[in-house]
Image (cartoon, rainbow, N blue to C red; front, side, top):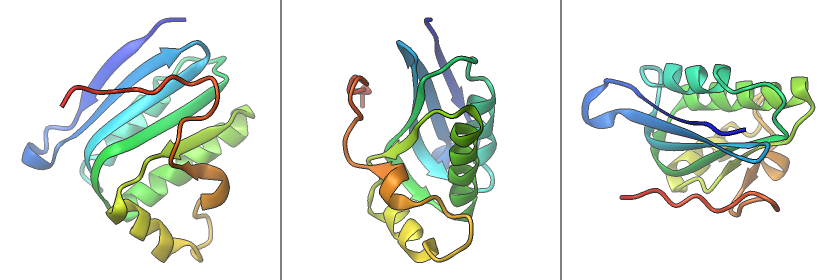
Length: 133
């Protein structure tokens, strides 16, 4: 399976970009910019466009500079995507601001369980994705 797609919002300097790549049966969505109500549809489109038969999904968030409650809702949808397909999903390398949002929302019903869902490293078998600056 081979795939690379790029999607972006047209929200000006705070635009969100998502690059989707396949590495074997793992889809890696590399995200850059701000995740908010105006840009989260780009993430939803990327998730909906993933091919069937994947073995895992990684959301690489090193480039995410801001996330609000719309991002939390997307992370919940991502977790549900994995549960329905019985595949692991991970959100990796959150910067301080998105991490803080997750910390504040941890008691909110439906917030993804950080210990199983979030990480700072790439799971075994998934290559490190380096994006040009």
